[in-house]
Amino acid sequence: MRTCLVAVAVLLWSGAVEAQTLSYSQAKSRADESEGRLSPNEMQRLVEAQGKFAGGAFARCVSRTGSAPTNFTVVVEVGLDGRVKDSWLRGESSFAHCFRERMVAEFSFRPSSLPFFTAFAYTHAP
Image (cartoon, rainbow, N blue to C red; front, side, top):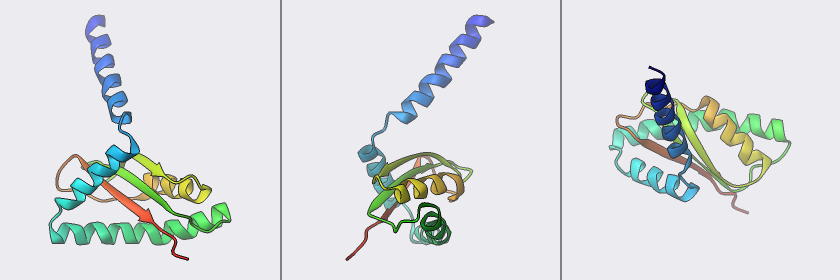
């Protein structure tokens, strides 16, 4: 019995480690693929979910960090339940880190298939 429990624990741990081994570039590539497979209706639902989330997150992160947003991209993997399972960030500002934290905690989108990755990019135009 103990051997069985140890084997299960090792399998669970190795799965968690595997999920963390994606680089930002790999996760972004998966987001591009996932988003590219969406039907027009699904894409509309995703854009609406991102817009609803971003409106509140931008205001909270400006207030929390005291800084304006700078260029960043957050990539997330979303589970079938709509919650964020993992995230990657390109951008080092406190605002970008805040936005990532908010996206992990608050973003919700129910994909029709798994795995599903999506990206939110912000670029400041002077």
